[in-house]
Image (cartoon, rainbow, N blue to C red; front, side, top):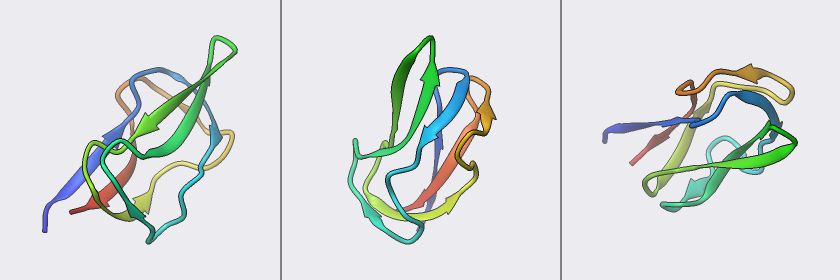
Length: 73
């Protein structure tokens, strides 16, 4: 089964992680929220699968294009 890397499209601070490790996710499900410019930007899974790893924690600062989680399809 291939791994899908979930990346953030904006730089900012992780302000929400609504899905737990090992959970089943669907394509388009929100995996994390990044606070940028006083807005909460969702980071969604591009494919359905199981959340294999979360590479960030609440309040971590992330860069644009950074991998925040991995989904196993």
